[in-house]
Length: 138
Image 1 (cartoon, rainbow, N blue to C red):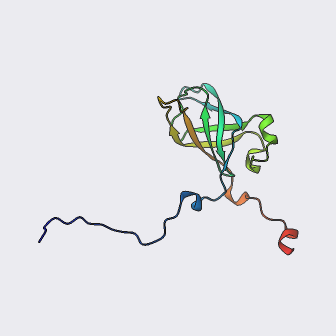
Image 2 (cartoon, one colour):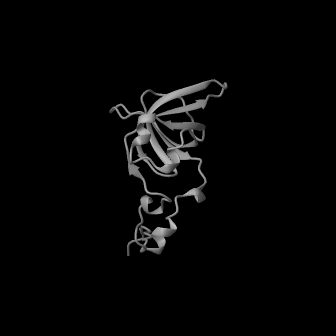
Image 3 (tube, rainbow, N blue to C red):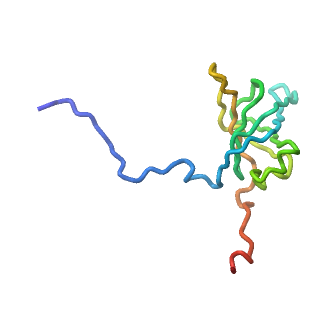
């Protein structure tokens, strides 16, 4: 009898992807934008960014240059004026600057990937776009 036993806990429930758990659809979009925040000394800082994907409640951006922006820092995110014309822009981003929280930081890599930040847009989840009554009655 073999005394070595490897415990395996197999999950029989179907796997769900992270996208299935999202509150809003995430779309791949390359749009120019800006971040503004205050550093630990209270100095206002700016960074030029490019979005990689957007949704009604979040956005992932890559910085053109490396910045010191810690996790959970509150920032103002704004798309460039020309980017607001795109069909890919969710309603929450069309109003101009929006308060956001940094919830993931991706450092730059030697392979050339830029520094990235996942931002949670500080919008009321109840404010999602509701279908019009005419569309519901049709």
